[in-house]
Every structure is written in structure tokens, then in C-alpha cells.
Image (cartoon, rainbow, N blue to C red; front, side, top):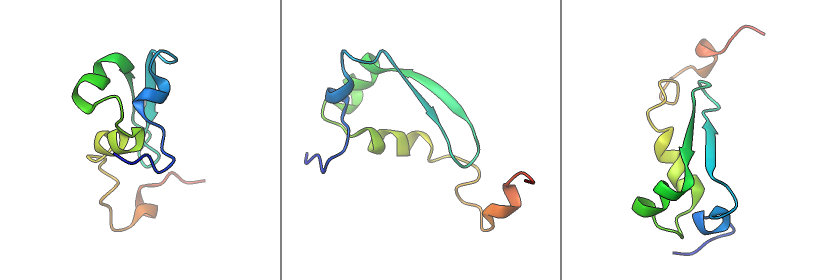
Length: 73
């Protein structure tokens, strides 16, 4: 799999124990242990490919009007 400059699980294995991810659209967040993620995705999987799948069910990602969900500033 070509890297295309992306960060892979190989880059963080042994350096990070936990990944924390937050959805920019809705603010949901979660923590994921790195070692168990390597098994199903593979050591050379790109982190953005994995994280896109995690945030795919964001209720705001399919909104027709993203401003309607934003907080008043």
C-alpha cells in the first residue's frame, strides 16, 4: 500500500499506547489502544483511512446545512 506521506500504524507502534480521536463536526471523542488496532487494519494502514471510518457515522456529516448545527458564537 503506498504511503503518500500519510502516517501509518507502523509509525506510531511502540511510541503511542492510545490514540485519541475527536470529530471536528460534532465533538464526539474516543480513545483506542494502538496494539489491538494493528491486528484488523494491518501495520501499514494509514491512520486517516482508519479514522475516517470511525467518524463516518457522525450525525452532522450528512447535514445539508452545517451552520444549523453549530453553536452560536
